[in-house]
Image 1 (cartoon, one colour):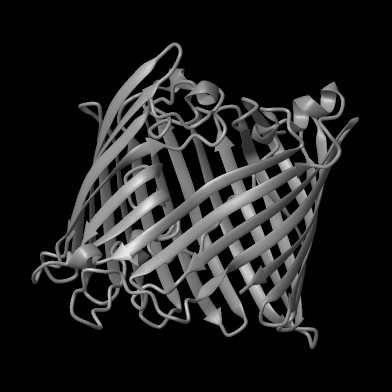
Image 2 (cartoon, helix red, strand yellow):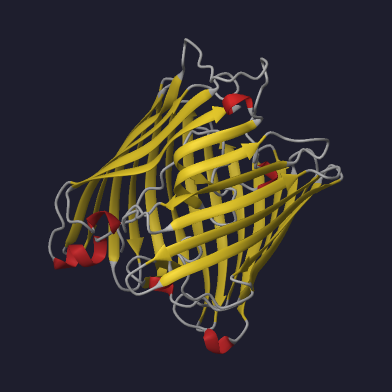
Length: 458
């Protein structure tokens, strides 16, 4: 089991959060013209500081293996977009291997990226940038430093410069360019590598938005010298008042890579939502620069496949809610099936009953059906949550996964049943405390995990 790294989050409002649905993305920062353009940046006297400081202690065990780690994450924003012409953003993390790497079994099961250099304390700098609105009076937004762009076809994490125009004309055209050195947190960031890109986005018709991207990455390694470019096209369209459609296409090194399509419909009252999606990988994915295939060294070639998804969510009564959905994954050739390359079908139904008894309990029950080439499984999941007031939330439950991937250790864990209990405590407007205990029961090994954390938002 890999030493999985907690995903850093950021409070920087400029990019949309990773994983946000295209319909919710706001690709252009809000710029509020409160004065005539100036040749010098303006910073208010009462420069605001806001962000988040969180800490977490994690203890894990399996057989004779054990591991205890502590993490501290700081996200800090200086200034306010639209008010201050110059703002800053910082995101960093400290990791501490409390009990050392342990015996050979501990290293094998819990070794991770933080152990590469053998140091007990590791400092990771994810973002540190300054943003300037209308530098020297130009109608653009300039960002300099270590930064992440979540709206590019693949995540762009680099040390460099990004320039974006204000919306132009009735089509609200926004164009931009960026470039620098791609960040390699664990492999070492090197000026021998380069990343660059351009993009343009517009709203040329009612309810529609289009975006085009071109990314180029040069990654120099001891055995390989990658020079890859990626073209991405995206479309979002509102159809009437209830339907949203989004689509995307990418082309990697002059070969079609993938295409996706998704449609979402709701009844306008929040009682019924239907979402359908399709994704197709058009070409086998081999070795490219890390931005375009970060897991090749463990997954090896990813074979072409289609994946279909359907979700129907319905509020039946004020205390009853049901979700019905499923996934179907099909390889182009059944002979390509291997570890990490599977055909399967999954169907599920989740029933949520809230407001149970005077204790304000909520019960979630899930029935799952999994079918792959070598197994046919019916299983279940449940979650019981108690919220006695706005400050406390306690949950117990169980979930199941037919395949659980450990990408860093190049393993695939099968038939994993997870049992958990979680507690969340709101300590006033700024502080929260969280704790959890998880037990993973799988075919080969069992794992236990204990988490305790605190978060301060300011």
